[in-house]
Amino acid sequence: MKNVILFTTVYLLSVAFVFGQGNALYAKKYTYTTLSPYQKHLFEDFINDEIPAGKKIAEVLTNTTSLRTKTRLAEALLFRNKAGDKENAAEILTWILKNQYRDENTKIYGIWKTNINDDKFDQNWREFIGCDLIIIRQKYSHLLPKDILKEIEVGLVHAARGALKRNVGADYTNISIMSAFLMNYVGTEFNIEELKTAGVKKAHDVFNLYQSHKTFSEYNSPTYYGVTLVAIALWRELALSQEIKQMGQTLEKEFWHEAATFYNANLKNMPGPYFRGYGMDMRKYFSIMGIWIALAVDNEKQAPLPPTTDGPKYGEMSNLAPIFNLGLSIPTADLATLTSFTSPRFISRTVPNKYIGDSLKQVTAMIEKDWMMGGVWGNRRVWNQIKTGAIHWKTANGDIGWLLVPGSGVTNVKVSKTAMSLYLADSKATSIELFVSVNNALIDAFTDKVWTLPAMTMNINTVLKRKTIEKVDSASIERDLAIAESCPNVIKIVYEIPASWDSAKPLIEITPKR
Image 1 (tube, rainbow, N blue to C red):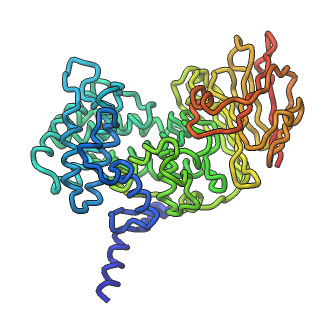
Image 2 (cartoon, helix red, strand yellow):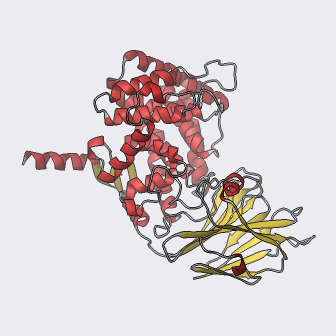
Image 3 (cartoon, rainbow, N blue to C red):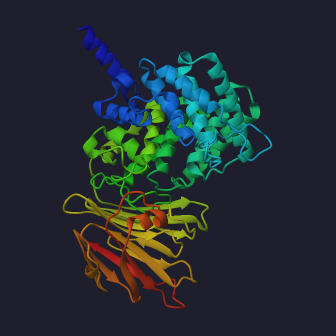
């Protein structure tokens, strides 16, 4: 009977349905002992990957390892707190804290090294490592020696002062949210008024920018949406300012709804466009949004993650540490949307964004159960992380095929409920490129009017002359298009653009047919 009462108490403490303004929230506080078997499997795989069997901590603190990942390893060990974990965490933190730049007269003031031998001098490491150190300080001070705690505090002050000097804009979504939290936390804890005030101001700037169009500037990124959720969870869970805490709760609820609306649970993917993307199929590389969804649905079969630890971008699994320490809070209706496909939907969004091009970019997307497509109008920035347009579909064997309009700055893309239209954005451009990836597709299947692909037919309407069509290797796809996962069968199609093309006329119209 005592065991039943204890289990019920733990369950009620770790899982709660919170009602506010008529909307139910699913809220989950994680402890190591209450992780589900699937969640614990993911967590232990991460630790075992970081500390292989038979290795001592000193052996994994190498000159090539990521300091951010190792900070989160320490955080994960403290969360688990098995025999020897807190001692190992202390050894890691002692090493991390020695590798911060503390010269106030330099641009890199307050950052930690990315690694020892090949430091990238990444300004964002103030926020990434600083916020993880705050989690550690808040939750695990009782497990750490006083000298380490003191050094954490010194490091946090340097990081926050460096963040104030840099003053990142609110449109740099994930970093600005963390920066606001870092500055306000440090300013409040250590009575540094300029940091405290700057943190609140930046939090308001972020909040107001989101509320202007209900979108973040780093729009629809499978990786950085996940970082943004971690950052908002810091506001919700650990902010010392009640203003920031309340804004965090509002943002978290609204942002989860936006992310769930833009997710197809049947395809286990987000449609394009991606303002920053490292892949085209979330099932085949580790994205941080994929990690959040996997933990929320708590079902390996529904999780948009690779099945093994050797998948591309596995280092992103270090985010398990902050996520488990901060917990989950999501509207119950949106959790259901992540679990199973609900209904077809056409989506239109306005995105405030400072990439070269329009300051307000227009996103359109259509999500059907077995296929989806989306595009952005108004971007001129040339960047391989940008995926200007995309079509995804499910094949007969359950795999995902895709079409990509790359981030070349050449095209504007908009979709209707039935078709994708590509328009000329760069009057100097002489050609456009499209990429199609699906197993067993043959070059002969790409005729002038119809592309007959496995499980998908695309009707093509264009007067453009096709210059070339060829298979491209996976290595060039990763290098040129920032697609991390292996793509064994990618076909590149290049069209000529006639001189003096009327930008009001579509270059190509693509109509998917299942």
